[in-house]
Image (cartoon, rainbow, N blue to C red; front, side, top):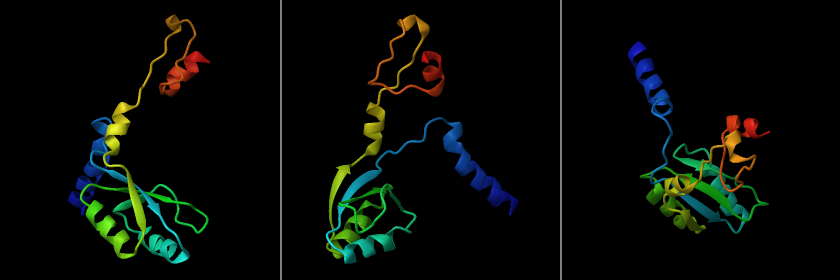
Length: 129
């Protein structure tokens, strides 16, 4: 039991110790349900831990965003096709989009200007305020 707990703790904590968690080859799908039956199918898929729903499958939505872990894309696509649910691959590898994000740093020597096209951490925002 103790060994299992140690291994589980290591697996859960290791990404945070080593820095950023990466999402290489995670695929983001825009799923386009057209009727209530398809929404019900997506609601059944909602509990599958292999997929992360970025929006809830409800009758009032135009689309549902689903993130698939590497290796599960084929299953998801076949599942959607089998249930005649249309989808679009929005990002085949979301890590590429994350890598393109600009992270800025602020210092008082920047003459009080903060670039609004970059993300800043909380310490830089507080320093600017």
